[in-house]
Image: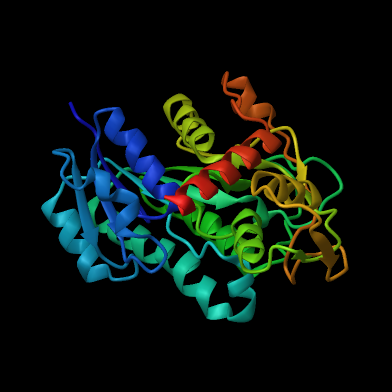
Length: 317
């Protein structure tokens, strides 16, 4: 029997890659997106597919959600919708309240009404805050440094409570920095944009020593599905990532090299953080996902270079 999935935020960067994967594995995919951050271009290649349907709907619109769940049988919800730009969330706290947290609450409420049995929630390393130790799923206490991280952590808490209050299965996946084709923001995107505008100088936020794991989006999707297909409990949380890291300076050097530029002056705004709410360095404990037999195919810097090349190729096209 074909599984029917609803991908909330399915026209976004990560969501559209998830839609690709589910279609390739013979699922019926309902893609829901308000196109605030996602784009039709990300899913244009799927629009005529027999097992794909696009719904231009806001995840906070419970009446519209109710019509979708009333009209279509949904087995599984993949909740990928959120504010994906942490810096913008720092400038306006309403952004993460609405796009990250409220989307979760409204979605859970309608799922409860229609007895939808399971949800996979896209969470984040941002829920942990700063730590000198590798971050494990049981790391405590969690002190998010951004409103985005706080909204993700609050969403996890509400999902967990729903599992106790109603018959719901929930799996929460904590992402690191995700990069790849269809990227819409972040350090790689910003560096390319800056250097196209001013090829002789690159302004770098912070001190350039920020050091994080970057995962290739298709590796992430494979990790999500490995976790989902091997889950043995009705409620679980897991880190998915890579066991290597890349510094901002290293990313800058790769962008400069791939763009064929020379004598670029790098200047720094200073400080350990790139912006308020930024976690300048972290590393994941990946014991649990590795125990399921999954490892990312691309190391952090391999994912970075691949993404730079893909972005430059796309911009030339």
